[in-house]
Length: 272
Image 1: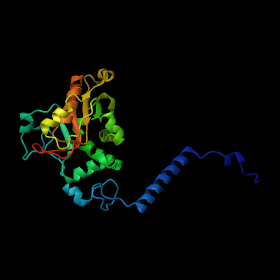
Image 2: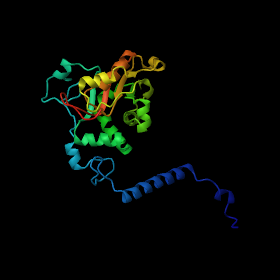
Image 3: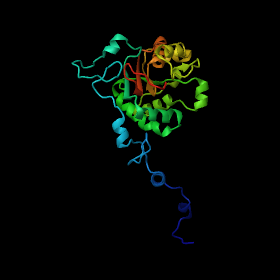
Image 4: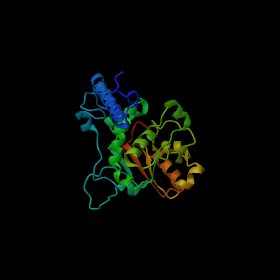
């Protein structure tokens, strides 16, 4: 054996910095191989794109993003620039929602529907990070002073069938990006309801009446908190309003709403 070689040093474990560099290089190689084997595709239509988690130009142009001016309460676009700093639409004045403010990335349309359906029904969990990133940007003003994110819960039987709650998945990613804690146990769905698909506004409200409640063990922590309720889509608002009312009855100080897509006032959407 070469006397200049220290056997002990040959068996030393790699230094932490070297090990970290090795792991980083390994992850880079895996991503590079994945890009070669599986080129990135559009989140909605699966056309080729430059990077994963993106929309192609056609889908991007057809996603109806909500930008100012919009109603401060409903989060729906306004047809003109009003004089008020925080304008409120006639629809919000005529029928004020239970929540304080709602924010959404886009109006519900074909591209938004494809993304929501992909996440919700096709187990496209890869869609959650980019969708939640857009939600965090769209809801920056209501997230700035939020103390907790509460996802709209699924009944345990539906959760067992679907295997995950898409609202909770989106909430967790928004929470990681913003630092707002997720409190999924602050709200539960105690009664199974039929799917909202195909129900009119009145039937949707009856369907979810009394379906949501705050567990007794959570009421003390919830009391006085500024909460943002997270869901994938806001249609007639029946489910959202039922959740908001349950949180307010239990002592929440303020409840705002953050969704990926919402239906414009007066429209209906084919999914719950």
